[in-house]
Length: 210
Image (cartoon, rainbow, N blue to C red):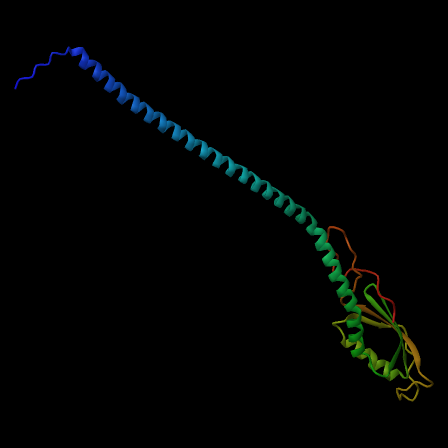
């Protein structure tokens, strides 16, 4: 069966134009929708990045505060070290003379009586009493043996030996003085703000005499 199209051609062209326009409209709407979605996505990422940047800035401020506190503590460290060194020096000083007197007692002849022990800068000055020259001699021999305590031991005077060479001095005995130079002088520690206290050994004030 033969079909004859009697409609003019411009009618079909209008239809094609409408179809094409519809297709382009759909494509345009799709593109716009995609761009809107992309823009919204960028906005969300921007807000997220803004929050992250603010959080990082807050953390950076906290880090700077911590660094400032650490710097302040480091600046206080020499003062703290000075105080600790001073306390340790005082503790050592408080024990130094009792240890010295304990060592002195070990090398003191038991027949010698001390009337005073006067410590000074690097020295011990001892006033003693002996019942005989022999006792005094034994005492000095013991003191000379204590070379780890004293660098030198000196005595002021000793009465002469008796004529009978018995080693015994007539009468109730005699007094004598001994000066001992310390091998390790004992110093009173001093506190220096911001620095370490000097170690015992430098000249310093001694404790009260015995």
